Image 1: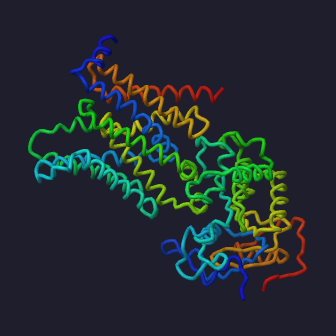
Image 2: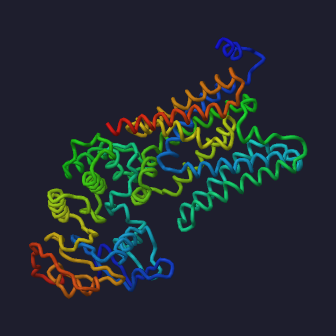
Image 3: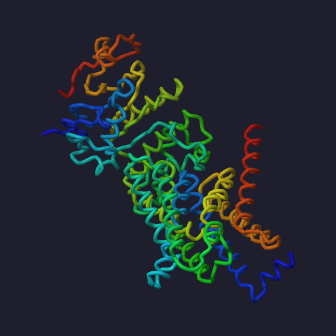
Length: 251
Length: 281
């Protein structure tokens, strides 16, 4: 019996005739945490879109809690990159975070409970005092944290973040990772990043995406693996990596 | 000014009263829908729908006068074609892989061509200028009821789905991921836009519709802190432009649509300059 929360089997995906992902086989289990790394154009974002059900595979299957992703996507909190937002859109920080509660009723009206959750989520990213500010007036890093709060307000079982650290300073990044490790006690965390060197210590696994997908425990990150993934020698910036004593936990 | 008052009150000149009442009531529709069109950045889609309206008007004239189907009036033809265009454009946006701007261009010019052809083969003289540039003489008592009904529908739908519509405009992908059927919601928004456009065509004409739909909302967007406030300001601006424009056009015997649009455009430019100054300081 497979208890995977996210299960991908024999998946292929291509844009027009260009193959983006080939023969992907991936299991993500409850309480997993993983960074999704790989070069630009390697298929990281496509993999995320497949898990969210925003695109359908050409071949193979994606299952989230045993069902097609469209049916379970309400259980996934998603943090897109902040840069794609219209800087002139007149909306307050609080209203943006409330969007995480959409879809819980037909009309989309927010209940008192929804608003409480939105405020609590803003508090979790240390932005509660900015809740009535216009979203557009915030800095890039603050906007990114608002989007994280929005995903938290949705209270899903899986949290997927697309390059959340791109515009965060060192301190905000540390706060984010502290928050993520706390959240990881009750939800799955998947984080797309291209900064493999700053992969924080709490991530249990690395999902390497470059057309093909490989899973490694964080302890296995070596020069040979990087060369394999990026196709050339790279100098690895070593941070304080905790070596997992468990190795490939789910093999 | 007294001349204008006398004209408004004169029992044998109902058209000016009708135009004013229709314009004021329509400002609600323009303000609310215009705000969505501006923040969602679909003014070119609104433009394509408005130009397609001529196909409906021409088709209506032809079917009524040549084929003899009496219940198809130009207005009903316009409503039908505007809704069809909205349906098509929503479908194009859903599929996503076509070049949306090419299809907008095709609809824009194709709709107008069909309209002109129908008008050309319909015997009798119909002045396309009235439809293209608007003619307040065309506004009848029936239009007032139409506007009241449309305002009612728009306020009702937007009142219920406000949060979802705002989310759709802000971040469609995320809204879809929250389990909202964004395709249907977008279609609903485009249909409301289409109906508002048909209404607007009566007042300022096909060519200038985009301006009156978007300029008041764009000006409002420079000061508003939220979508509700933007809708309110846009409604007020729209009413102001229509009243002043109708007054000026009547007093100086100028085409009303052009005067209204010029007023709106001048205020928009002014607000841009003002905003630019303020953000530099």
